[in-house]
Length: 373
Image (cartoon, rainbow, N blue to C red):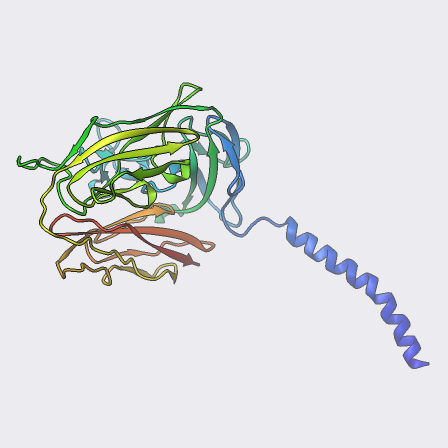
């Protein structure tokens, strides 16, 4: 009899318990995200070049957000300093730059900064978002980086960010491909004195500017394999094709480089005449991926990089994912940075290239650092 009563009571409680559970999870689902996050467009969304989109962000529990700045990057671009962050104080022009934050263009030595595609505030529609156009020249995998500035009163400000990858199609037919370089291309000194930026060493790695002309009248860079480009060399003993659209001098001789994309192709005659002193290319090792806590000092370890012939190495670190951080000792085996404050796990990706004293370059190596609150 007692067991029968218990059974009846339990049967009455089951629907109520289910209703409570459903209501509880419904309430959780309706709560805002805990961290600043890009809501639209969605991660890996397929977009068209030049397409207008509305970007939406959830500020989560972040209080005091002054503005959110949105930046477009190609998949493997270095994360450059935003212009406002590279300046401080005031002068005749309104601001003056702080040199330590500027990066230099590799070839010409000029200052390179990123300019925000959109600056949104709480008054924007939607708040901290708004209309944003996919760059007309975009193609393949691109990054959309959103950096929120948070005011801390007299303590100044800090930033949080979110970053997503998107897939962009030009939306127009590829009509032709062109190598934007000398034709034919001659690599090496050919007995002459080397000039700045000259590719004149066995094992030297380089990238050629390849441009696609599309039916919409836009020329787009198609160097990256993520744009659909595939490279071949008719003579691997002269030029070797590496990953990411990189090419490497393997020896003297002639070759024909061919790039194919979307049913079109272009070819480039290349002759190589470099120093024939034997030299093996070095190997870059950026160390294992790591998880760290915000506020801790992080070391990026390239000490396991090596040269097969035991020569000294030159190091070059760069950042290709995440909001820009102050990376110290960029040209040392161990670079370092202070893990920034985050409200949710965030990915920072770094690239390492090493070069031996004879000028041979390694293929790039990468390391991911996840920063946790």
